[in-house]
Image (tube, rainbow, N blue to C red; front, side, top):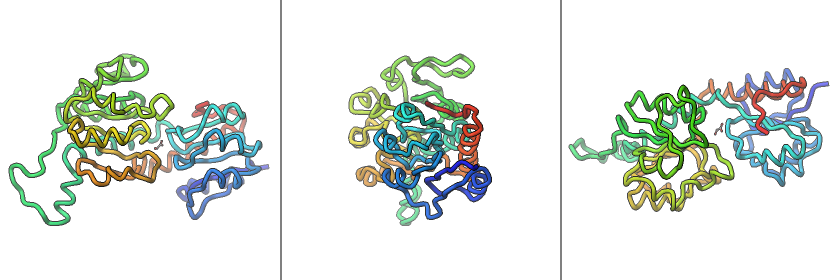
Length: 318
Ligand code: GLV
């Protein structure tokens, strides 16, 4: 008998068809975002869930999930939306989708850094409202080429950002839980602590995962370590940054401009971010290419398939 899978969000058509060929599947044709309560009630008596970043599956939700559920395959590389320890304690395997979105996300990170440093938002408004004329001092930004880039979190995406930044002649510095082997580091300069990384960075790329340790890691205290006029990009998670502290830093010139794709409490956006000009915003588009989204759903499906075949899924995270 086919296993029953509850899919929380609409997928690309081909991905849904693949799932239907393997499992008895309930899809979300209207792509409604379910509340935790709806996830609990709708997935009752299912064997697995294919979830997404928009599903907050915390310890309380997990405790109320049907005991028939044995796996949550998150269709994302980040899994900060799921309490993986609570899931483990309940005997639920959790998987993610690494690798397949590394390039797309690193591309967006470069876009964020460029968009912020070259004042793309203000430029767009000036062009749109026809309130501009070329002049030697019109909308001067900060040049990214040949600067020092600090990378916070040198995992797959951080390293892919480094690779791209090198083509801009940037010098790579990074902070990570541990120093990487020299082939992975690839010329990047390791900083044992965040303070020393921030003091060196002219551009800062946030690429660490959202964990209890990284929550509000960018805060009033740590922002003080930055040089004046640093450009910051965040394609990781909103909750790594204390928004109030960032707004202050954007107003007092510690941060020249902030490019971000991810938010605390998405899809809400801190109201000050919508007022400030030295901000470049995108609506969580890091992995938003057709190929990447297809690959993510394919990988989540493969994790479900392997799990129910009795194999350890390649992307198990708990
Ligand atoms: C996207 O944000 C992901 O974690 O895959």
